[in-house]
Image (cartoon, rainbow, N blue to C red; front, side, top):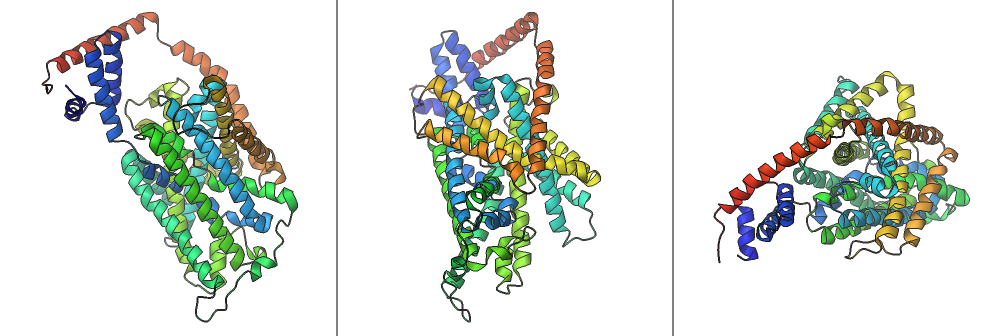
Length: 519
């Protein structure tokens, strides 16, 4: 029997690859190496034939990252740092590159772990894993409920008679149902939505180049006239540090690559490739787009309430700009919501599997259906809280940015402990320049977090984020005690073991009597 025969046999069977992996371990422990090899071959074949590719990962990451924070919120960062904002995007791009490789290095080295929360629990302690998991999940759920409100307001321009609660509910239900389709189907939709955003940014860059170089009939070339009148860093180094916090938010969401890495085929090849593609696209698109903005309009004309791209288009009397950018902004936010739901559903599954979440959310399937449904219901709850109690919701939503920064800080701290314990991993998926790259990124994230109180509108987010961390830290002792009480007794463990052995024996006989091709 050769490997080709094994693959043929695996292809004829529709069982889940995780089941085959468990069967292979059982046969290996019991000395049946032939059957163990057969099951491992089935597992490998089924796992790698249905996984995500580097292109899928890249489009999902672009779908999560390029959202309303860039199309709308970048005005604040540009006004704060002036042309120096390009340095902010470069520095933050390097930090994103290091964070992604740190996360993916740990994921590829230990595919059994399902999220960065799992690594935090292993290398920083179970309490740290509990806190970072729930802080990330809560921050993302609240943030996505606010995105649903924003999209509802945009849709109201076309459907003024439909109320915001109805529109928001429809959007959240739609995003939830889409995620129930699974990673492969979801990646196709994400590719479409991410493609719309990328094309929009490329179109704006092309539009700007035509005016800058005087290729539009009736308009003189702008050249670098607008940029020459701008001071490079109007507020000095302080303005650069302040803008970095906002720029980091425009990159936020890239961790979807690490969360999806466990569902990727040929991880050693596809994950590093996806990281290079994602960071390369993001940094290139962002810097070119911001450069064109600086060449087209002065920073003093930008407003926090209007997309800087719309401001630039309107300055050239493009009346269609408002409608076009509204459509693109809706697409960007919906894409972010869809991809974010993918990540938080798997984060919740990771928490539940470790006994750190409600047992009724435990899933036995590859797609965490219960976690996705619970996350969708939570988004609906926060949506209604925001509409009924806007003051309370404002405090909660401010914690979203803090939650992301806190997660990235914990991730880099985890990676440092991971390397100290395991050393330099083999393969191409590893962070270069360790420990300096990790320490540089960790220091930058800490500075960004503690600069929040010095930036207008971010003080509330800093306080809310600290309150969120304190709340889950206080909850952990009670959850740990509850988990110990629910842990199975020795008698129950023996019964479950005996039951599994009977099932394994039946499956062994099924394989033994199957028609395996012979050479």
